[in-house]
Amino acid sequence: MPTTELAAIERRLNGIPPVAPDAVLRGPIAHLGETERLQQAEERLAESPLEAAALFGEVASKLEASPFARHAMLLRTCQCAALESGGDFATAAALRLTLGWDLHASGNSLGVAK
Image (cartoon, rainbow, N blue to C red; front, side):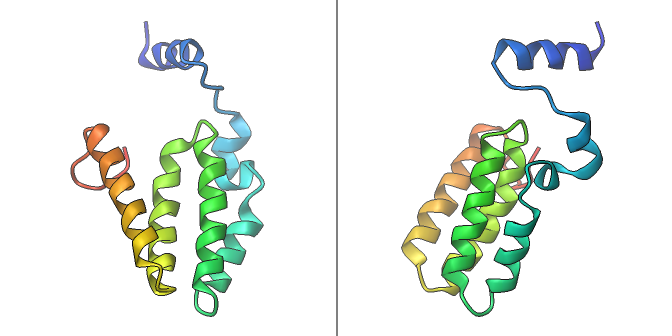
């Protein structure tokens, strides 16, 4: 049985929805309707980093609730940088620890999403 078929069976058994062809063509963020929110986060980063952090967090949460959960790590990293830029070091540190633990638990010690 091909690997792609096994992956599809595993997703069904674990209750993970299949990836829509639209998501592959347009990308996860566009597929989830979060392009504008991500753009707002990037635009607000310089002037209002804590507001940008909240927006990055909202987009990451949407990704985490979708078949694209692994993509959220990149946005959580942006969220950490925005929190640090806004002076919220405690929240940023807690989030970085969570990200580090998630990477460790997935067997990825280099900090690169698999």
